[in-house]
Structures are given as structure tokens and as C-alpha cells.
Image (cartoon, rainbow, N blue to C red; front, top):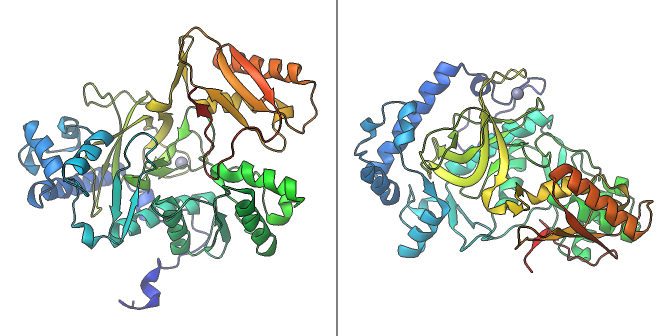
Length: 440
Ligand SMILES: [Zn+2]
């Protein structure tokens, strides 16, 4: 094998008929995996004390853990205090710009990005080449499970620049060996048209547009482009169900990586246990909740240059340990959304995407795309205020449509809603994630 040159830019080729991208790791015996995790956790803790990494070292010391030897096995990990986003934000504020939680000198990194900042000041993430390699290898396991293979043409419209998502996804596709068509997020109709026109020239095999899919359909409709000519189809993918119990895929910007990916055998997503210890934790005690129950998603990264120790993403997660029929041996995770995004009204709590899932049941507002919005409730007893745009699908009048929407919301979520039907293109459009919940 060459040690320098274009040959080492990507992974070694493998038999396209093999079932797993990395069979050794993905089917590793449970005892060996546990031993690997313990060894890597020990290395992470050694770095915390020796580098040192002051934020984590001080937390450990305050909890009476003064050496890596104090954590003898994975069972002891529950004694390690949790760290939340606000801790990272405070650390960056007190020691700008990087804070005191980095495992490497930021100048050893090659990529930087910041979180979206939807819930406060964005924090900064850095990746060394090794960190990127782990992201790309983790992603490769996911693409392989989906049936993607090197040589396919893939496309996406992820945002870029300081938001690290686009470069990460592009990099992972290129590393995997697919031809990557990166079109701009469809923030405006003109930008959406750029992507659509290009796809009619070079049509992707895998038209996965995530949150933006609806926007492209809408603009294609306006321009008179048949979505099929652009390769656009609502194919669906394992791992992108809506509502509670979505398989655990990503875990925020700090541990960007695919923490895991779905194999198609629902429920849940296989967790990359060689590169992370993923737990569902009761934040009050730090202990794991029972299997299958919702707890806080807590991640300890393994084997990276820049790590995180018991990082609580403040999102809901459940862990499943029964063996999976697909043959992979890892535990699986379910993702239940961000606690901060939970909507509370009429004594119930739910995620906005559960309202969306309910509205998908009303045919006439789903063509060409479902466009809707709700007002964040401020009084518990009041009906939920929901707005939907009139669709092109066959339906009754607006009053009947509104009644049908209210009925599905009542049926699926158990809450009363006041629904207004608006003209098409009344609600604001976004290139990436539309703001479905507004404060008024
Ligand atoms: Zn499986």
C-alpha cells in the first residue's frame, strides 16, 4: 500500500456484495466490543488528565475522580458528571474563543464550524483529519446499509459555510466514492431552480433532499418541470420516519457524526459503539434508565482527537439491547426529539413533527407540498392555533378542510385545535428547515 499519493485519499475498495461496510466492527462479539470501549474510554480519561482538558478534568475532580484508574469499567461511567451545551457556551465565553474543553490545539484541526444557534449563542466545533475520518467511516456504514455503493450519483442541498453540515455530508459522499452533486439550499425559487435544472442534465441515482424535498417539488411545479425529469421522488429512507421513535441518526453539531444509522429492521438505529458510548440517562441521577424507556441522550466519544465526555444533548433517547435480525451486533437507539422543542398544551406534550404527521392524513393540503405553521401555546387551556395552506388536491371547501385538519389533530394528539386555511404561498419558505412553530 502506498503511504502517500492519491491512492490513500479514500478507503480501500471492498466487495460490493458484502453485507456490511466494516464487518469486523459491525458484527463484533459483545464482550470484545465492551473491552474495546473500556480501553478507549481509558485513553480518553488519560488525555483529560494529562493533556489536560480543564473543563472535563475539573468536573471529574469535583466528583472525586482524580485519575483514569478511578473508572475501572463501563459500569463506573455513571459516576462521571454530565456536561451540557450551556457548559460549553460558558467555557467559550470565559476563555474565548475556544473554551477549555478542547482535546487538541485548535491549530491541529483542519475544519471549523458552529452550531446553528437556534437555542442560544452558537458553540464552535473543530475537527482534525482523524475526526473527519471517523465521521466519514461512520457515514459509510450508513450509506452501505441503505444500499448505496461507490459509483452512484448522489445529491443534497445542505447549508454550508460556518454551519458544518454541507461540507460534512459532501465530504462523506466523496470519501465513500460517490459522485456528489451539491446544490444550494432552496432559500429562493431562483436557487431551487439551479438545482432542478442541473438535475435534469445530470440526474442523481439517489435524490435525497431531506428537509428541503418539499421546496423542490413546489418550485418544480411552478416552473413546469416534471420532478421525475430531475430524478426527484419521495423514496423515503430508513431512518427518516416522523414522530416519536425516529431511529437515532445524528447528535447535534458537537458530535456531528452519525452516532448510528438504521438498518431497515425497525425500530432503532445501530450505534457505532466503537466510536461512542451512547446512553439514555436520567439527568437527576446520572444513571441509565431501563432499556426501551426515554432518557437524555448522553454521548461519550471514543478514539477521536477531539472528544466529549458524558455530553448530554438534552434530547430524548431510548436504548434497545435485543439482538437485531440484520446480523449487526450493536445496541440500537431511538431518538425522541429535543426536550426544548416539546410543545405543551391542554395537559399534553408533543413534538411539532407529530402535528405534521397528523396533517399528512388530510389529502387535499398535501399537494404539491404540505405547508403549515402553528403558534407556540402560551395558555394551556386554549385550542392550538394551526395554519395550513390550501393545496391543489381535490377537497371540499376551506371550512371542511379546516374541520378535517382539526379532527386528525384531535385524533392523533388528543388536543383541540383551531385551524385556518390560507392561500398558497402565504407562509414563509425556508431553504433548509421551515419554521413550523412561531411565537406570537
Ligand atoms: Zn439491524
